Length: 147
Image (tube, rainbow, N blue to C red; front, side):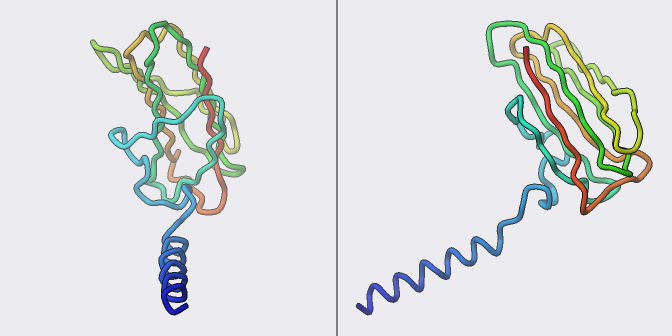
């Protein structure tokens, strides 16, 4: 019985330590904050995170790992009362093309559509503050799709 009690207590201590150290993704400083740490995320999902400071950025990545060309459509909605910027860096073997979405202001939705992304090419999607706006309480909404 003593062995079981010690095992339960040890397991409970480890689990409580893990739970205390776990944060929601929107609160993790340094997660996907630059191009080299961009998160490769699945299309057709909504990612709702926060920009924690005026200098915070979130980077997402899609790599064309198929044998076919594809189109990418991405949209980004700033939180109500906040204005964030959205840009795409389209990386080919020859060059990187930076495309900035048209700014639709506070709470607005910015979008970008790219066509004919070839196999092996990458699309980095960057979300950042516009004129110092950020929110530690309100999430943005980001999604993209592949056709």
